[in-house]
Length: 58
Image (cartoon, rainbow, N blue to C red; front, side):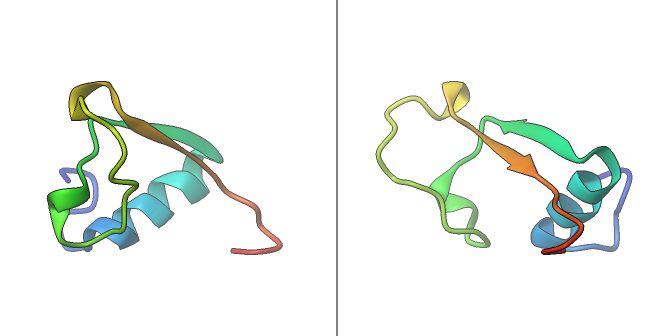
């Protein structure tokens, strides 16, 4: 949030993934109200998503 304070959660994910090409976002929650997350995990502190940027798909 500090790097992109005026961006939404989804915009920040796109920008950081575009910059680093592959990122791991840990401790995600389906209750963030912004993004759809798989609700099949019991311990959200152990959960995470791997995001990969493909220039052709943007």
